[in-house]
Length: 401
Image (spheres, rainbow, N blue to C red):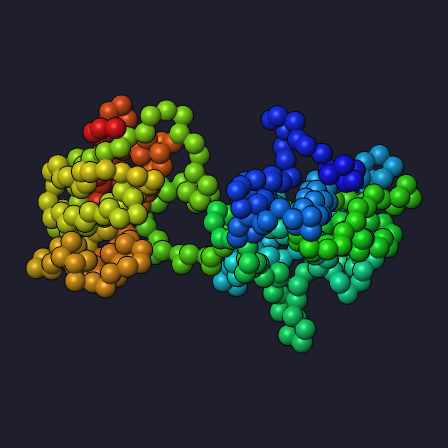
């Protein structure tokens, strides 16, 4: 790395662009999150060391583009463009936060650049991929797509139909699957044509360059960094009257617990009242890890044990309500005869009696002690939870570590 001016050994505690892991079988390159960029270590030959150094250089250049600051002072655009990033989901547009969204393979991302000013602007859009690849997405005009005053440019629209399609996300087939990894879309807007093709490079392969705007060029840089998952987007579950699940990002990248985490819990339905005095059937499903589920059917008020046992990773609870339901088998019996596999909550919703409605849904992670207090926590702390057909309360108790 003495021959790479833009590379050096990181100081203790300093952010890194990549890590080289040495093993008995050779060296393996990890990304900034510590995830492998190749399936396994490569032998320490002179050629392999050269490729490793070059790969680190590409990660560094990708980080340079991802972290470029927008123009300031004389280099700032006097009339900045309005740049937005949008997820196409089922034909609808969902605005993306500039950082932290969780996306999946097959998702489509639209970049929309509107020029509200009085002068022409030029937009160049790059994708900084999972392995440091830098791809210019606006290939039709290498020096920037011209956008006139009041006009809007969108990436992409289909030829012929002009339908909005966006950039379809994918996971490289030879990149090891695992936790989500960051990907960044960078939009550079300038007041004059600017050839930025020198920034393009393959991920851990060939090519590459750097760019700094000249003093005569005013520019604006906008970016959107998201976490890409290696699989397709999960199917959306039917809605519940009361859904207290936290944002999915907490489940996809769980926070670290600050203290001891329960190893066993009990979940009890402590109060239950049907509205307007109509008889109802209440079905509950608790999942306390990848292989532990407990289904319970309740037809009267009182104190009902919904789960008692070990918990690992995630504690989930769903409650469904059916008016009447006399004579129908309990949920546990219905699930016992249903096809195995798949999401247990989707299976439960599929086998419940006709007319069953989702009443309540939540989940708890280790950082929240799986919803348990010390040792018990009531939900809600006071009063009752109210849905369309029932009012109820439940409690989670830490029964051992």
